[in-house]
Amino acid sequence: MDSQSMKVAVVGAGFGGLAAGLALQREGLSDFLIFEEAAEVGGVWRENTYPGCNCDVPAHLYSLAEAPYQGDVRYPGQRETLDYLRTVAREHGLMKHLRFNTAIAQADFDDKDATWTLVTADGHTIYAEIVIFAAGMLHRRYLPDIPGRDTFTGSWFHSAQWDHRRDFTGRRVAVIGTGASAAQVIPELAATAAHVEVFQRTPTWVLPKPRAQFSRPTRWALHRIPLAHRIYRAALYYAADLVLAPVMTNGWSARPAEWFARAYLRVQVRNSRLRAALTPRHRIGAKRIVLSKSYYRALGRDNVSVTTTAIGRVTESGIQTVDGAVHSADTIIYATGFRATEFLAPMVVTGRGGRVLHHYWDEGGATFLGLAVPGFPNAFIMAGPNTFNPAGSNVDMKQNQLRYIMAAIRLREQSGAAAIEVSDRSVGDYDQWLREAISRTVWPEGGSSWYKTDSGRVTNPWPSTARTYARMTRRDPALDFQPMSLNHPPQHPIEPETGPPSVPAAHPAAS
Ligand SMILES: Cc1cc2nc3c(=O)[nH]c(=O)nc-3n(C[C@H](O)[C@H](O)[C@H](O)COP(=O)(O)OP(=O)(O)OC[C@H]3O[C@@H](n4cnc5c(N)ncnc54)[C@H](O)[C@@H]3O)c2cc1C
Image 1 (cartoon, rainbow, N blue to C red):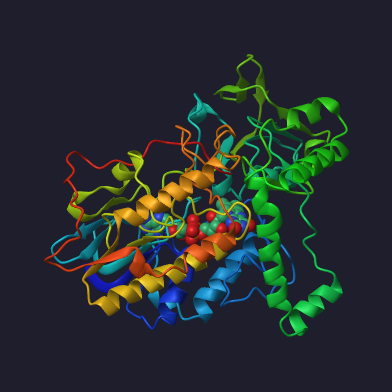
Image 2: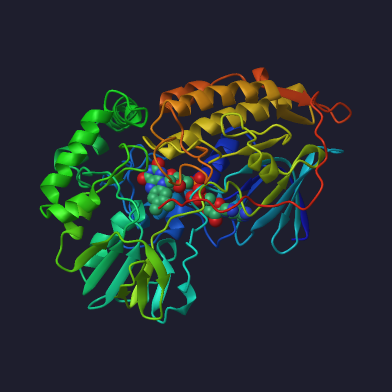
């Protein structure tokens, strides 16, 4: 493959990229390829193979509408979810569109012929009229720069790069981090390891996760009664919007949720010192809420300890905290999350007039609905800024984005324009709405988290309900996009940039 041309290039084959493939097919477009840097589909569900990894959102909602989840459990594990995505790719005719082991390193918009040139990591070029970036938000691992990390003589790895050769039976394991991944893996480790030491920077709010298994009658009904599946999906959707989403805005359910989480902590953790250490100081919802029935129980076990003293360095034999104590370990597991705020990195994306996307974002540049950026014609982003729904299904968010992206592509086709680009006015209006909505949430004052950058800008979560995003993405793109012919670029000129492109600085991590 030296160079290839196509109508639409999709970057990434996780939930987003596969959903984009299905949407393009539905649109009657067959001239597209999906480029994936790994050797198969799956995204986070291919990468996170740690024991205990499973969905936090019931799969009947956390699945594609056109490929209803047919499994028997409420919260399938990593394997089942990955199998689901493999099946979607196979059974919906996407395999012929997939190009694996193809990392896109660079994407440049050519002003003269209104096409995108994508350059792969091994130097091949791909030409596309339209590009959909579905590179994920929680895909690049975050490893904290702890002094001495590489001097450790035992084994160490990130939770998203699990070393399955290790048997922890009778071993001492240190886990750094207490986010969603840590909360899933710690109970599994605690069941076999001699000792698990958990290094906690910030305690997390925990709510009990409903039982994974359905009762037999429910299972029967979901499989046999016409519409039961759809009614259950709709019920989950509305429940998330009506009950969970208001937690993020300190709305009606925030106090009952926090009260319930406190009561749950009291019941689960009898040791008052441990309970004090596990009591969050931020409002519920300010960071990702952990859903688990086994996390607190695991932390209360005799072979598990929680260290809240800050880590000073890693030594040859373990972790030294700032008080000088050395905590020896055979293995250190970094459950330290992802570089969530570095959207699309390390790709270098250059738009019209040489505008570099990361420079634009570094300077506080805004998006439209998290999916389009002024100066980047014919380019769409999935899992872009402020599109992570912490109170619902992120697959649903992607399906809304795709409805809008397909309408925008249709607009381009119908207008006969070489390119379409979102207007500055629409971006400005949307950003004003977004900033006001964020100011009503519990995130701005919630301390550091993967929801925001080091400077405190809330860049990742969606600040409203799923229904609001659905409504906004039903809007006619003709109101917000302007067609652009080759000889007549849009009205807002872009000063060419000078200097080398950069990726944004490292930010707190998600787990
Ligand atoms: C452990 C874990 C559990 C989660 N559980 C839930 C849940 O229960 N409910 C929920 O709503 N959300 C959950 N999420 C959030 C999750 O990120 C989204 O729901 C969704 O799966 C993300 O899909 P995606 O396609 O946007 O990104 P990803 O799954 O990250 O896929 C992106 C793909 O793009 C590829 N890629 C990236 N860059 C390039 C490049 N330059 N060139 C080529 N390919 C590239 C990657 O290899 C990857 O395969 C979870 C996340 C994690 C990490």
